[in-house]
Length: 66
Image 1 (cartoon, helix red, strand yellow):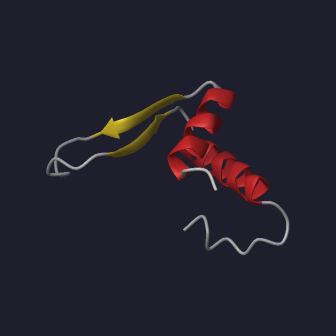
Image 2 (spheres, rainbow, N blue to C red):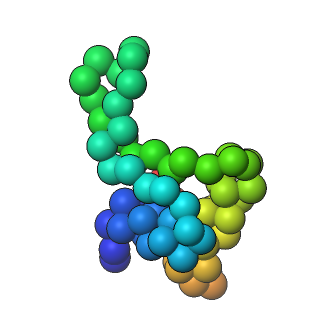
């Protein structure tokens, strides 16, 4: 299984989106997370979810994504 970060990065590269692996802002208290810069977050989120489901293949439950 690939790392979920690698899959998100691959999706962003395919879609021409800006991907950051070390995003941190106020209120995060020094913690980092991945971030995607885009104009339409709902569209990107639904596309990313479809990409992950396709990657998992038929018959998978989805717990692997969580």
